[in-house]
Image (tube, rainbow, N blue to C red):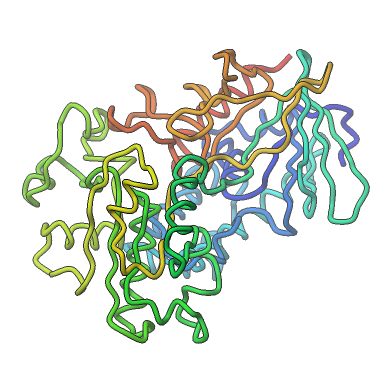
Amino acid sequence: MSAAARYGTIVCGGGPAGVSTIVAAAVQGRLDELLDDGVLLIESTESAGAGAFAGYTIRANSLGSAFLECLEGRAGKELLAGLEHTPEAEALRARADEYPPLPAVAPFLALVGRRVVEALRAHPRCDAILGHEVREVQVAPDGVRVRFTAPGGAPREAVGERALIAMGGRERVEVPGRAVARLAAARPGLAVLPSAEAIGGPLLSAGAVDSPYRDVRRVSVLGGAHSAWAVAAQLAVLARDGWFRHDVAVRVLERRDPPIFYSSEEEARADGYAFASDRDVCPLSGRVHRFAGLRGPARELARRILDLDAEAAPAGFDSRTVPGPWTADSLAAAVPADTGLLITALGYDARLPRLTESQDATPLRLARRAGAVDSGADATPLLESGAPVRRLVTYGLGAGLVPHDGIGGEPGYTGRLDGLWIYQHDVGAVVLDTLLSTRT
């Protein structure tokens, strides 16, 4: 670690969100200010930047060009100088106008991650530690103490003014999960698979020739928004390519009709899509479902199933709404009896280390809103009591900001702002302001 006795910010997690903190500072022209304050980045794997992207089989919900915008402006001239014409960038540029597969994005994100790690290690007030997992963050009135370990290694710790937690997400399973477990117990032949395993595991991919799921005749996808529809779009590709041994039916079960992204109200109306201008339209951009809306292959599949596209949906693919709250009885009625595989796509909560108060090791219980960590408007998480935890900042999958006047977004969206571009720009600017305004 750096010779600095105390860091300004300890970044817990070096995936897309954690690395984007540094990239956002470069985009905003505040990189020197952030690094001079002292930054320690701790990442559990041996490579920062890409997270689990390389292992996913779905496509991004951003165009390839969006991933390259960090190479423009000050960031491209300073922190990321020289990356514009690398093979990794050129490969993405060839997909600039499409939604690239996440494994095609991963090499570029890893390249950006390496550059960030190099910048931190080159600064006398900063450092980056790879191959170590953050286990605990102790919060005190005057700072934080972060404990982390390598596999089989002795515990280590670092102290800082504040900790930024961006350690990825885990699928939410708690309340619907109990109902799903009861449903599975009542149907012995029903297999249940979390969406993370469906899009990142070895059993639902083109190369999985021995997968038992090739024999299923009906799949039900339980969830909503991009989590569910990205899985359904992947299943459509497998069905098209003859991966299943039989004709397969796929049904998406969700609480409401899928939100679909449109660049403007006029485009949505021309498509015959019903929306509410006061709830579904971003006042800053004029886009319909700017943040909640489906994009890419998930969007096109939903449009076809909803009869908004001239092209018909794949044979056997449909969707149904199942109003919540979901119970074992409501799911038993909604999930077709011949379903052989039920994929749960219930959204994400933040993956957190143990959080405690340093004086007495009392666990800190963070508030949840709509199933994810409630981080207020400035990325400062709230306790269940409603009090902010001033020494912590959280954002990324399953945590972070909701739309507000400064960032925009449709008023009816209650989820968290997630995506690499917004990490590096709008959300990144808010996070940076919070980090640098809480210096002591």
